[in-house]
Length: 250
Length: 250
DNA sequence: CCGGACCCTGAATCAGAAT
DNA sequence: AATTCTGATTCAGGGTCCG
Image (tube, rainbow over all chains, first blue to last red; front, side, top):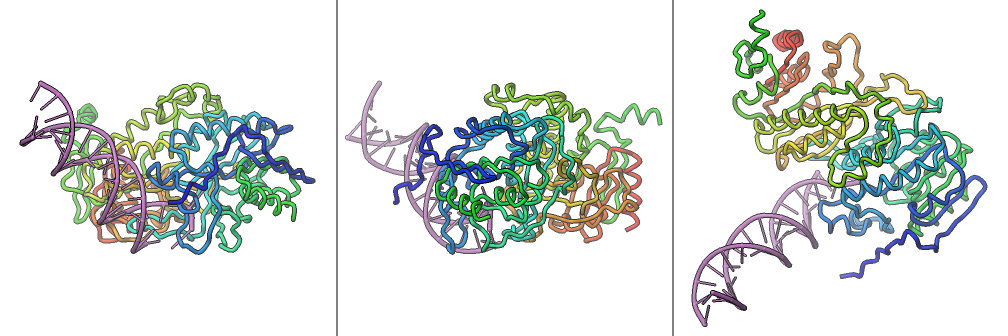
């Protein structure tokens, strides 16, 4: 019986780190505490929050993410935070951080939020509750690389819910489905998204992009690679460092 | 003729049409009235109900509802701006017909219900409210054949919500995404699904299949083609005739 | 008449295997 | 491989039966 290695994150803790690069502004801390202090306004929020989906019981959800989502004992991932909420508090929490993002967006700004099938209804509720106009559900097709599902249909997709702050202003035309295989060696986060997936999403957005759940920083890498400005927030110190290193290397 | 119209709303009226073929049992009438009188039990419900997106304009949804929603502590689904009554009654109606289907399913029976992105949250609510275990969201990729969306992401997918009556009993392994182009010439119904899409869905199911919103009968054609038994219900007389003719031709 | 040991039951939880 | 299933185990609650 190990002592819980999960550290509690105090939203108001002031031991936040802050790294400023040429086109990037990276914060370590809880996004609920950090977002209100960000400077200026953004054109888009593109993010992949913790899903809080694993497990049916409180105990399962509270388990370390490393254990929860690990299938083969091959790789050890550091835990990530914020993955232990039930549906009600997930909704409330989602509406909170989305509401803070809303305040920091320019009119017409986009929001793009990833979700798995289970949290999809909650995510669409939250995006509307926080003031956005919900405009659609996009699909990430993992190109079949998912567990087979006996007697049913394989969960080979994840979803992104998207919307805007008022009328749309962009003039890009993007598909609503992206078929991208996750190459295991490329993964820097247990549940990280492939760069090939994030690049077209970021390309659909304006110039200044915010990711309040930066993780290993793939959204940032995509944004900087397209010459855009990026602000990222990550609560977990380990992944914050990974993101800083990756974005600095670009 | 006039008399028939007058009696149309009586569930037990015997001027509903009923066509019995070798492997097919086709009813013309409102599924809420017809389902309770169907004989025996089914292995699966595969259907494409009317999406009822009427009355929900983007302008309505654009209004902010955050305060209202966050103040209602115990609401399961949001009472969002504008024509929320439409959403609420769509939910109620969906839960009604799904509940009737539930009664007619064998243990472990599957339910597969199509939805567009807008009704997706309501459909997942309804499927659970009517007793089913919600197990996933599958995707129909229309292979790009959809209107471009300026400043956003093209709605090139529709979805199917699937679940089961208790533990799964089947042993098929199906993908969770189907990429099928709708060939305009093939369409027999304004929103009909391609046969190439319905065939693998039907193949994932057991032997006896029910479609309470038969439309032009594509689900039935797929089922009969696989040697399964099919029962279909369609309220609109025109489409009922189309379905009878198509299934008879098989 | 009361209290406590005892059993029973169903729900919640947990470990392990399979996909 | 951003899980699900099974079966074992724990645990709280309620009832019974004596002391």
